Amino acid sequence: MPRPEFDSVNTIQMSLQSAEQHLHHNDGTTQLQLSCALINIARGSCVAVIRPDGALGQSPFGSLHIPADRPVMQAKISLAPASFDELAAQLRHPAPRPVTLVMTVVDTLSVSQDGLLFIDETLDTAVTDIYWILPVK
Image 1 (tube, rainbow, N blue to C red):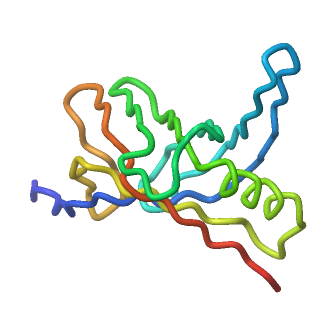
Image 2 (cartoon, rainbow, N blue to C red):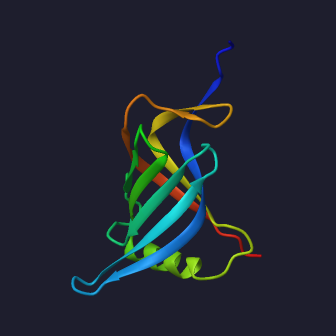
């Protein structure tokens, strides 16, 4: 049986499925909770929690937890308050196609030609960059 070819990637592309803004009145905090389907990794999803408690240009500014036993990643991202507010406003507008989120992580991931992620054990890695593709028309 031939051995599958692997690509080394450090970016994870995701398609936004749903977004909710959570407001906590007792402590005056807010956060976005995003549910995303993975694009460049097959059979997986990511739940991302984004908070306005970071600084502009701060890196790394988040973490990504990739469990070895289930296909659901968990991301925690800190944005500068102004960036958070701008993102929340952008996500409120209806888009003609799904928003795409791309995260760059410190660790290199092995992905087969079929898009299957291969990790031996649970991986926690830092998120060093994040960008959004927001359809406008």
